[in-house]
Image (cartoon, rainbow, N blue to C red; front, side):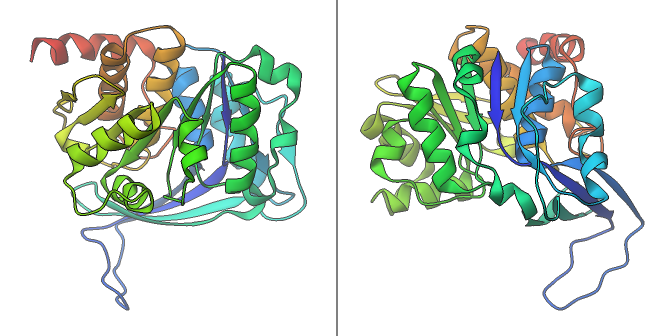
Length: 304
């Protein structure tokens, strides 16, 4: 079982020809409301992949709460540890341009009130791995990471949005997942500055004896496990409709594949293919493929 500790949001997305400049108003062609949040997206992706997944997250006491949970429920994500807390459910405003690129702003709401203590010892003992992100309180993340490590549980952190990580915090991780912006912020705070991305990936992995995974969008993925050569894998070539949630799709499926004891390369391939397929459709959770679709698309990816 994969345990995901993280945010639950409702996304309000606007689709237009281009992204607005500062101070500019741009007319959108359409808009839609759908479930989102990094924790929820990653849990939904893992469950759609076919791995039993449980999400510990929080929604508020407002009208957005039930809407934010609809796809998690229909996918079968375990929500028995869901917290309903006083205050607003997290909400994200998303603008998507004609190329599928986006700008996102998030109001976390009660996601910041989620606590490591909401994860029971029983639940933690059942997990093969814990996956976390940074849309919740960073200190609560660290508290849960320490508990998970004490249980001998594999810990994966998607440092998004990027927060400062202590050396002890990095050493407690098994896997760190970042994009280019998050990699640079993490590496610089660790004293690795003025270096190219491959060097930053290798050095972070070496210093802290962990696996660092760098997602590069259309350029694929770069990864380094401590003491091993860099692994470079291309993206799945697809027509892009919307990149929203693609990184979360990658993280959820990649984590699920690791729980299934696949090799690092094989887990990366599944995450890459899933993320590529998600880019062909609009929305975060709504766009995520199931295992059958991922495995079918993998044949073309491997042949390429």
